[in-house]
Amino acid sequence: MNEFDLLIDLHKHNQRQGPGSPQVTEKAIELTGLMSQKNLKIADIGCGTGGQTLTLASYLDGKITAVDLFPEFLKVLSIRTGEKGLNNRITPVEASMNNLPFGDDIFDLIWSEGAVYIMGFEKGISLWKRHLKTGGILALSEITWTTHTRPEELEQFWEREYPEIETVSGKLEVLKSMGFETMAHFILPEDCWIDHYYLPLQKSYKSFLERQKQSQEAIDLVASNKLEFEMYKKYRQYYSYGFYIARKL
Picture 1 (cartoon, rainbow, N blue to C red):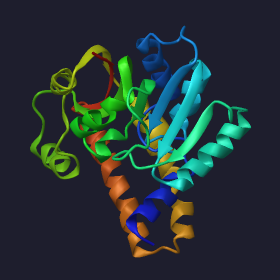
Picture 2: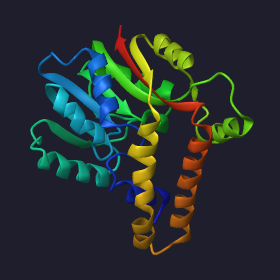
Picture 3: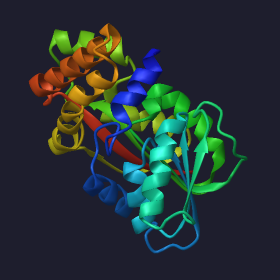
């Protein structure tokens, strides 16, 4: 089993595949100013198993195209969508976020929680922008420094993991340079990491290792996730996810 297969098997049974919460999604939805609008066209890119997708469907009127590369995640999303009676509102699409199968000026809202890092913040915005209508809203959560100085160990960790991590002001400058006007931004609280992501993930380690017959690759993946959690607990005052809501000019 390759690395992607292991990642999918570890994460597909969880409500979320990254830090976040229904409350944070609701807050960001309110900040878009779209709650009173009708018949919106929405794309949720890197939707995973749909933690935020279902919240979007609860608060916004319109059709949601839920995009993910992995059919295993989309299968779980489809089951959850059916249980909520939202099949007519949410359409799963298997596609790479690097090559979305959509035309220009399609969506009123492009949403992505904790997924744009896969391709990089700047590249993601530059590629997705054309699918958004002029005046449309881009809402992204992205790993962000919350201080201007950090311990060397933490700097080195994120230099390996994601060199594009930046401060809030750095992310806002990228949005501006890409032709967006920032409407709002905020930092995700600790419970998004601990209660809604790491602790549920921890509970899945035992069954994951059993499914993988205690393979060395699976053991290494769990160890990597444990290290990531320890780094967060040790250094959580220095970084989090930032949520950025911006309008295409």
